[in-house]
Length: 414
Ligand SMILES: [Zn+2]
Image (cartoon, rainbow, N blue to C red; front, side, top):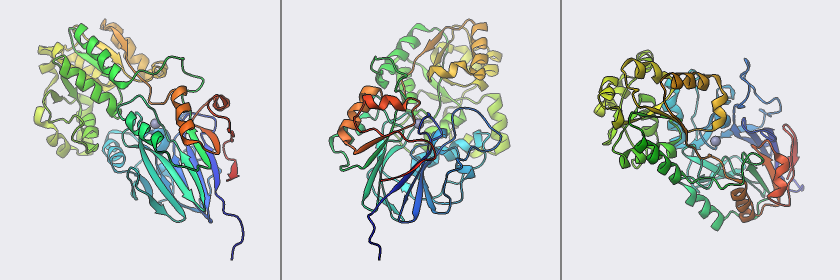
């Protein structure tokens, strides 16, 4: 017989004061789960950066909120335990794997489905599908031993799924003991409200119209909202969207027939030389076959470059140059502008300038603005707000009165 008060123990192993590498452990009744097992965004090290404070003894499962490296990247070094994540997220990571130079992932485990509670030991886990730049992203309600914690994951309110957050705020989970809230934009942002994804589509339309040659759009193929914007801009400007096999596979992995697919009209598959080698090496002939209904070659693009927009990555540079596809071309950087400082982006910029291509920055963040975060906390009314995924934890006091800042590796009781 146990007469003690119920409690939950929480530890942010990493992410209490930084963006990226999120890893949280929750313990109740002698068992525990990890919420996210992320790779830090800064500094490549030789040994995997596993937080030393993780208690592996009690661990019985790993929940991954969404398929971004800084939330799942540590999985290859985790013990083989059930991995709970969305089905589409799982398919996306599996589809991406053959194209990446990364250690293999084991991803077997129960599925996260919007608002369907799963049990794991003493934990009841209820995922809420949210708006974020990764497809199939969830916030998580974790209940155990009479305590309730809500983890925002990465979240925004200006993408194509923002209605989901409005629904969450309209009928919020109640009596939350703790809210772990991401705050990526805190202290970083201007006071200007973030542009909605639809405005990005309009900007792309304007640039596509003003460009006589091919429009190269440098964007993550896993930012599905953005691929939709690029495709819709193509439809409005009579361009065909060119994707490579990696992008075609990611689009298919969403399992969503409303998301553009390689066999749709106005979409074409084109394989750069370096990817041809990857296909050979990884034996991806069946996938190539599956996406080849509208296959074209760089020389096709060269005949009418103004008829195309292309999902661009570094590996395209040599092929586009060789086939003379770049007359009148432009380059659109459709990602966080912080990446522009990285070496690989500098190489692309040198190449762009050598070809006299205009540069455009067209992007909206994957993360909620401070104002939107404030609306969310106000709706969720937690007893305590704990910062995570932010490099400005001190700024949370502007959002809410009951803020407790924690340190990486610190265990506390709720
Ligand atoms: Zn994310």
